Image (cartoon, rainbow, N blue to C red; front, side):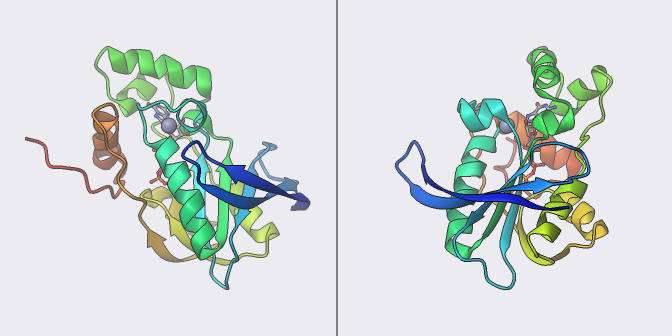
Length: 200
Ligand SMILES: Nc1nc2c(ncn2[C@@H]2O[C@H](COP(=O)(O)OP(=O)(O)OP(=O)(O)O)[C@@H](O)[C@H]2O)c(=O)[nH]1
Ligand SMILES: [Zn+2]
């Protein structure tokens, strides 16, 4: 695999924050999906990296059912400061796609948690594979990273794919009444390291 194109794009977010991103596309990624890298700031020897899984509802429309939108906004600013890459991975719905995710939302409204709802519809808890993300880093010439995440599976999978993770950096906690149940399920079922307020 290799870098296909790199173009520079000025970004402005809804709250007025501005930065500049190098948008990088790739040839030959293993899953054939159009994953995108954003090069931000001035990467040093060990860049700060975020693997952000696509969430149309949270990233674009500001859905408060999850923490994806605030995590994306936070990541862009932190990576711009440190220098590194945000990999925008086309793995909507933890790999099951948008329509299936919305089907699971309907089941969650009926009382199931996010993982129970996936299973009730015949999906795995989390179907994401980060092989393509490792390929993107390799194509960018990156072998050692600091990883911005609360998800231990991302660390495990990258290491398995020969990316050295020096430090795991947690994101901020973006809890709200609308997403608290979802965040609690992530901590309970997939060992996400999110310091949530205690249950009373
Ligand atoms: N199937 C399903 N996917 C969801 C749901 N809510 C969010 N997602 C997807 O989950 C992905 C984000 O994953 P998260 O579990 O929030 O976070 P993470 O990427 O594992 O971990 P962090 O790196 O710590 O953010 C995106 O692809 C979302 O579309 C849901 O209820 N069901
Ligand atoms: Zn989301």
